[in-house]
Figure 1 (cartoon, rainbow, N blue to C red):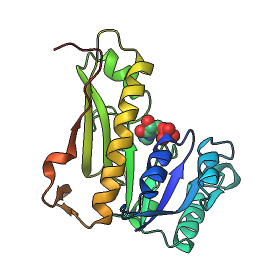
Figure 2 (figure 1 turned 120 degrees about the vertical axis):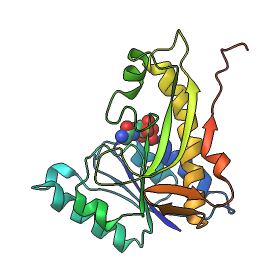
Figure 3 (figure 1 turned 60 degrees about the vertical axis):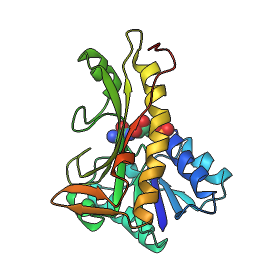
Length: 216
Ligand code: GAR
């Protein structure tokens, strides 16, 4: 399956996908990486991996739709079958989300539907949550919403701050994003009445990342 990965920054989730695709058994390949920011560090990762990559700078377009039309053109021209948002920090319009319905996924650093949007780890700590995590979901017209494919969870420790928690959740993000892409590429995922079922392996869609600091 041909992937189009959209990034805005560091690109560590992109790197997880690059590493997974390097395995000949992995059923997907990255056909195109697009950044909306010319200075995104993730672009270097794409170049290093000799991937087809480009910047489509949202600032160069008069509105969201014309920016997204350019994204869609580039993705279509590269033969992309699955769009993977990997730290892509632009709100998408319904025109784009409808064009790619069932063919676009996002990774978000919280246990959705809690904490859509920004500063998820600060907010989870402030709210006194005992667990934090990450979610891979199909993209819908609402930001950080859509049928959930897989979630990872990790305890929030008394001495966690947003950075320590983000580091731990990020490890889990890399694991679950690769799993989700594999399942979609293998045709194991079905969306029915807005929720996802995964053929034969439902249990693997809840991933627990223990902390090393906790003694049981
Ligand atoms: C990741 O934590 C990802 O979950 C988050 O941005 C970070 C990107 O890191 N995405 C969102 O907040 C989307 N709402 P990366 O560039 O190293 O993959």
